[in-house]
Length: 269
Image (cartoon, rainbow, N blue to C red):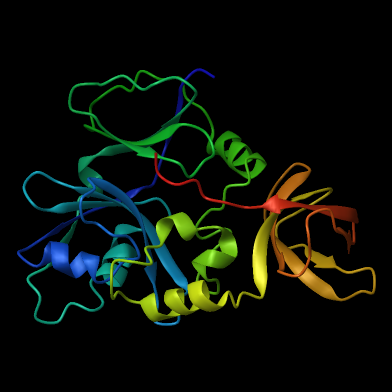
């Protein structure tokens, strides 16, 4: 697959200050130590998902946060909600960059002044790209809708479409973005309890049939057992009862829907 690019509304926030590293480590779900690039979830105290960011360590000791689904002001409010006496400053730098996502099966080439951050969240090799405002990106323009079809077909969950403020990361196959060993952070106690007890009631699965976002899935007896969260053609991702195995046929107002494999976010390469 040749490379394609699409403009993105990615929020770009820089976090600075002497306490930045310790503060971020104690707030997000990722272990930021010993890695230059991490995917991190921002959870509330009940362990539900508020935001996803890519976090890049910078050579000057600051951190660059990229958020594909929230405006910068909303991201800053989430990130800094628990700043009390910490030396931490979050600054919106979105306007300084031309922002895009590039995807395809071949490697991206280095370009002067252009920053690239690999991502696994689309089920195909892809990169978040920050370029100078005046730069002309060399890749043919594609559509995000095409990328979403690829993601759904690959069974890869998305924040917040499949996992948001009412879901635990583990319900939606986002375990790769949760550290169980780094120590305390917001929502960590809930994450540890889920890991040790396995007490989930719902799980995200691929589904096939005539599906649409928000569609209810019912048992043959008429009980609602799930909801479609993402859809593309005759494939979707649905949050369903954890007791329903792969191969289960469910009832909808548009015909039968077949449950497939569990949705899963690949670990960062």
